Image (cartoon, rainbow, N blue to C red; front, side):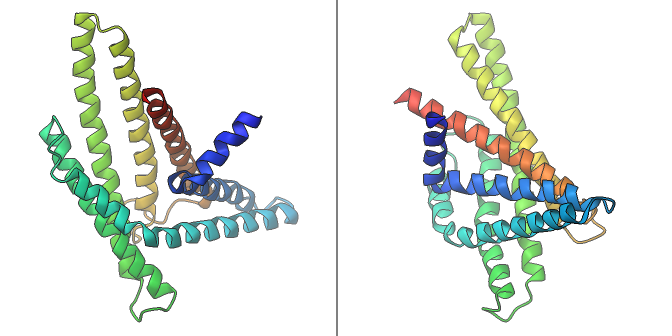
Length: 240
C-alpha cells in the first residue's frame, strides 16, 4: 500500500504524469456520467450524480487546456532536438516524425487562440480555431499510427534476424518494444475516433458518439498512456 502511494505521488509530481492522471480521471468521469445519464428510467439521484460527473469531466478538460498554454516551448525544444531525425535509421520513420512534430507544434497556438476567444480575451470566433486544432490533433494521431506500424514492421524484421542468430535476451527486448508499439496504435486509434467525433457534422461519424463512448475511448487511451509511461520509466531506472 505504501509503495503504491509513493508511486502515485511520484507520478503526480511530474507534469507529464499529472496530466495523464487528470486525463484518465476526466474521461473516466465522462464514461460513468454518460452511462448514468443515458437511461431515463434510472432514479433521479443517479441522474443527478451522472450530470455532476459530466460537469466535473468538463472542468478537468478545461484545466488541461489551460495547462497546455505553457507547452509550446517544451514542444519547440523537442522539435529542435529531433531536427531532421538524423539519428533515425529508417527514412520513412524520420519523415513521419518530422511531419508529426510540425502538426503538434501548430496545434498549440491554434488551441490557445480558440481558448482565448472563448474566454473573451480576444475578439475572434473560436469555432474555426477549435476546428484547426482538432484537425491538427487528428493529423498527428494518424501520423503516429503510421509511424508505429512502420516501427512495428522494422522490429519484426529485426526479431526474425535475431531468432535466426539466437538472440536470447535481445529477442525479449524486441518483443517488448513491439508490444509497446501495438499499444500505441490502439491508443492513437481510440483518440482518433474521438477526434473525428469532434469534427463538424457530416464528416464520417462526427457528433454521433454518446458521452459514455467518448469516455470509454478516452479512458482506454489514457490507461494505455499510463502503462507506457510506467514501462518507459522502469526501463530508464533499470538502465541507470
